[in-house]
Image 1 (cartoon, one colour):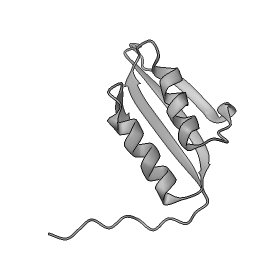
Image 2: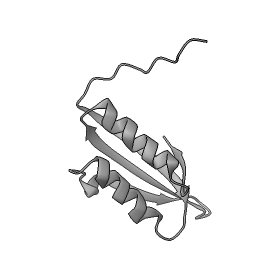
Image 3: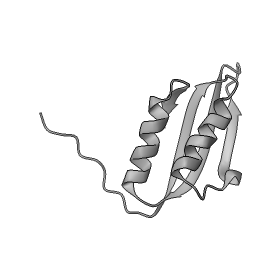
Image 4: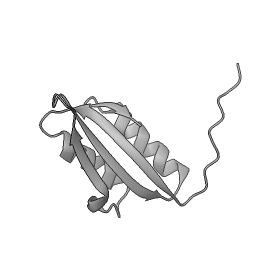
Length: 89
């Protein structure tokens, strides 16, 4: 079986990200803490929060300048390993 090929990306680049999780207490600050750990110069004005129509889920939308593939990969790994996060798009 052939190993999947990661798409070629050119860094630095603007990187949009959406993090979706259950609308529970502490979800938003937890996501912001993870984002700041991997994107120290994150402009919080670029972060949006939205509730689903039934308010069961919360989505966090952000766009930032990713400097390296490793930065993006590390951020994605930490987010997806968190039990409060359902999807990362």
